[in-house]
Length: 186
Figure 1: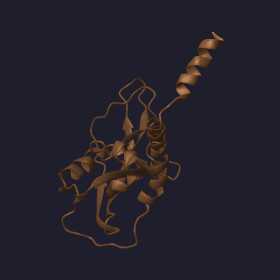
Figure 2 (figure 1 turned 180 degrees about the horizontal axis):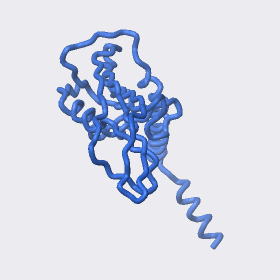
Figure 3 (figure 1 turned 180 degrees about the vertical axis):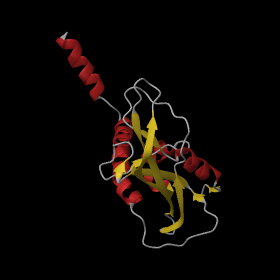
């Protein structure tokens, strides 16, 4: 059994130079991605607002709620979301190709309660997220568009027995807005 393990280690250690180079490139991708996130999340000082927003090249969408990463995986308060196809893979593979950054900054506020139909009824806080979307054209290092989105109230919501709040976010509206924008792939 020991001989077999040594034989496997020797075979695995005999990688071609091309295989070693490919493996090194694969290992560097996450480091490039992590290194790019702080740069992506920084708003440029220059503001050149346009009437008709656009998306240029590869796109990275970063989201935060109350200054914290939406998904808890970016220590500085931002997370890349997948509102548009292949965003995460694109940025992880080649962050230098990103020409447009979309920042979605949401703030939460409690606005009333929902009452359950269980016996006895419970009151669950209603938390609304109001979001500001900032579109940045990295080719000119400028903020080109800012749009605000508000969560809409709902008459009926589904509340589980363990729910402690109901959170309403304008996620669908923000995604639909981005998908409606003209895209220049250069």
